[in-house]
Every structure is written in C-alpha cells, then in structure tokens.
Length: 70
Image (cartoon, rainbow, N blue to C red; front, side, top):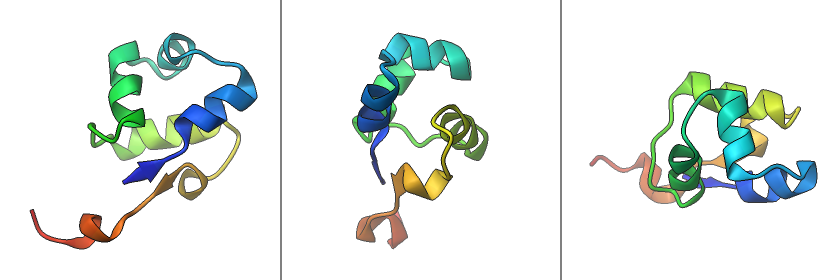
C-alpha cells in the first residue's frame, strides 16, 4: 500500500514524533508506515486522516500486489 503521510506531515509541519503522539503510537510505527513496512489498523488510518483533515483514500492507496493472496 502506498501512502503520502510524509507529504501530509510536511504540509502541516509535523515531525514523525508529533504525528505519533497525536495518534498514540510510537515514532517508529509512523516511520514503518511511511516506508510501507507496517499494515495499520482501520482505526489508526482514520485517526491519521482526521489529523490531516482529509479522507483515508487521499492518504492511502492500494497497489496491485495488495489484491493478491499472500
């Protein structure tokens, strides 16, 4: 899954640590999400979208391989 959290953070002038604090996760979790190495919960995706005042699908985008069985 692709995401544009880093871009959205820059628009709001937020560090990974600041975003992490607002959504109640570790900075390492935000870093892993940005790198595409963490499958986040729906609740966390909704919290992040709320911080950026946008819809979830404006931040996260499924890729072709996300549709394939693992």
